Image (cartoon, rainbow, N blue to C red; front, side, top):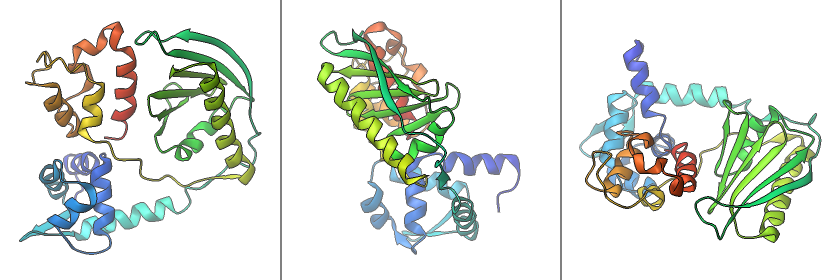
Length: 265
């Protein structure tokens, strides 16, 4: 059973990926063949994911049949017990209002779209972390005390101070509609008094990563193509900062989207 720092690191690395977490949850119902697992989570990099889980002693594989190890079963049990009380009381939070849409500026990456700066009141502060599960692609950042939400091309960032920014907005009507939906989603949770328990985020495919890469196949990252880079990024074998073209101003929105997607890898 993992216990020393290196073994614990292997477990943390194995469970840092949404696909591997989904595989573990799938196996909690019983032994599965590799074909069944591929049908459930997709066959992209399946062997790689299985190898990492096996190296972390979370699963055992024998003649194409995969099962949770004893450690894997205990790991999931402990996680379930810790998560039993994860629903958070937000009954003390007050409903919010959109108090001001201060700016509607052209996006740097696409002049036909807009970047919106707005304000909500009262500020949500630390409640934002609790609200993260409300949004399938919502990610709370403690570093900036903000909830970052992706929906299609639009990235919305809600700060604890009450400031809200949105990118890739088509027009003022879409800005108002998006802000209205944001307000309603948050206020419904506040009215209920309890935020939903944390859940698995949607799965990210390599093609979705590739969509936001420069697609120039410049090889500056050390890989032959942008798609190869996307696959390696999915596998934790490289990092976004290796793609130096993303630092150019014309790719600023692409980088924002990739930073959001990276949270679900």
